[in-house]
Image (cartoon, rainbow, N blue to C red; front, side, top):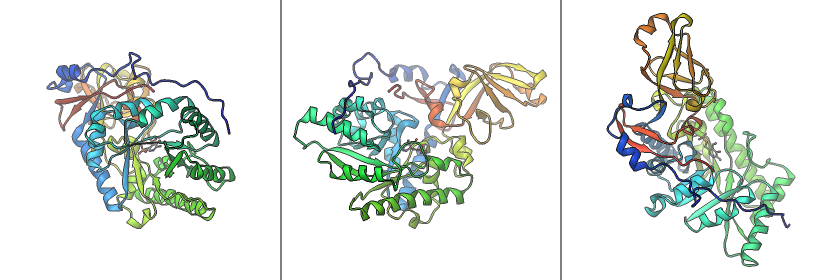
Length: 414
Ligand SMILES: Cc1ncc(COP(=O)(O)O)c(C=O)c1O
């Protein structure tokens, strides 16, 4: 079916004057300083913890005998991607924006052979096809999600305009299906999805790489048993759907499932739990946060990032302390433990209110004020690492202590 294509849009990273901050200039200024010498708020990444988390991910995949695909949207940096690929022993990533795709593909990660396989982790809107085909020439494999007929209509129309009747160039596609998260993905066991799956596997321009589900619902788990059950239920839904497709003459062999809580659960579950699954994917795993601690599968010590912030003022009469970091430093994402973050070493303080640049700590015991002068620096464990990291143009990197050893620059925008 022909589709009325929208105009093609461009990733601003490509020659429109938009670029990321210069790492070298930032490193020249920050490396060697201690956290107490830098302007706050600022995101601090403990590289040793990132590495340990990614090694854990690699060990889980090895134990379960599956491939890993790391979602780099959590940090959007080349350095953390390199750690993930090396430590988790993979060459495959998911990105959530084309800016991330360009940034990673045009970095040394591809040249060095570390990165070979990129998946755009959001169903692609048809204004972005030009950039998709530009990227396809720069990396071994780039794949997209399709979960709706119209996307395929649009792609086929675009493809015909670009390549005519020639079908030599194949577009790699994962069939994104919904197994409990109700965010993206086609409904399973539904006539329209079955028709779409049939179109996908019979299209001469597509190479169908597998089913893909994402268990975002597993963030609600509060113990190992429910996390293993969530993993099992996602796996069962995906594998049952694969079997249903097969009964209807549609072969989609590979199956990629996961989210950080269920991937952590896979580290504890019997290997049979993943029977039929070929790939696990995780993103927040690299950084972790209070939401992951709330699942009970990660500990405070696994959280690799904190927000460095200072006491801007103090109000003993209302047992309150004001931080120089607010919603633009922490994000407004909640965590089951309450508050907008947790102050390391002062876990009994409550960061209960944030405005744009204000963080309001309440319930501070009177005796704590003696050691809490204005200007004092604290590190705050964030609720959701992806959203908190997204607040910063660059990250200060430490390795266990307070001394800055590197600066990582994420890519921003779309
Ligand atoms: C498509 C897709 N895959 C994988 C992930 C990784 O999930 P998590 O960060 O829970 O590991 C996400 C996160 O939103 C996602 O959207």
